[in-house]
Image (cartoon, rainbow, N blue to C red):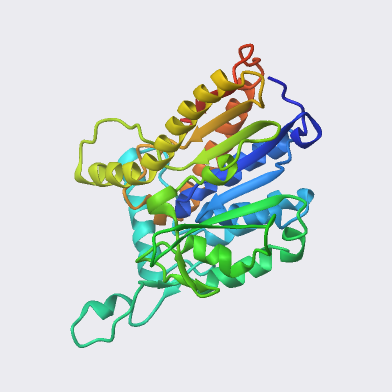
Length: 349
C-alpha cells in the first residue's frame, strides 16, 4: 500500500476517527502529533465526545498551529498535585486515584465545574436535576482554541456524533452539510448523568459513547468513491489481563461497555467488504488502521477522570508511539485484489 506523505494528494483519502474517553483522550493528541510529524494531513476527521473536541481543534486550526493548540488544551486540563511516583506501581495507582477523586470533587476548570443542585437532587427535599456537573467551561474553551470560521470553510471536513436522548437516534453534524457550532461539540461530550444534555434546534442531545463510541458509521454509510485509509484511534480495549481486584473488575466492565460497539462495527465492515469483493473485486479499497489504547497497570476504573500530569503525559506518548508503529505497518503492500484490510495496533502504554 502506498504511504505518500500527504494522502490528500495521492490516489486515496485519509480519514481520522477519534473515540470518546474524557481524560484518556490525550492519547488522540499524541497519535495526531505522530501523524502530523510524518506529513499526513487528514481530509476528514470524525469524533465523538473528547474525540469530537480533538477533531474540532484539528479541523479548526491551520496545520502549523494544531499541535500547539492540542498541547494548550491538554495542559489546561491537567491537575498537578505533587510529584508522580512513577517507579512504583502501588503508589502510582494511589496517586492516579487521588487525582481522579480531586477532579470529581472539585472539577476541571477548563472543561467542567460542579452544578447545583447536581448530586444533592437525590435528596427528597431538593429540586430535581439531570446532571452532576456543568460543562459551560468547555464551551468557553472551545471558543478560545477553535476558529469556527475556518472549521466551517471545509478545508478539513469535520463530523461529530451525538445521540438524541428522547429517541435514541444517532445524530451527526457534518461541515459538508451544515455549519458546526460550539454547541454541537458540547452535545457530543455530554455523557449522562455526568453532564447535562444539550438542546440543539429542538432536539435534546447527549454523548454517543454508550451506543457508538468510535463513530465509523458516517464514513461507510455509502461506499467510498476512492481508495481510503481510515485511521481509528480507540481509547478502550476489549482485551486485558484477568482482573484480580474489585477496581480492575470495574475497569473491565467500563472498557467492555465502550469497546463492544467498535468491535461489532468492524466485524460488520469485514462481512460487507467480503461481499463487495465478490461482487466487484476491482472497486475502491479500504485500509482500516485501528489503534487501541492499552491502559497501563497503574490506571484505575476512574481513569476517565484522571487528569494528573503523569497520566496525561503517558497517554500522549502512548498515542504518539502507537501511531508511529501503525504507520510503519502500512509500508507493506495490500495483497493483490484485496478490498478491505484491517490492521490493529496499540499497546505501547
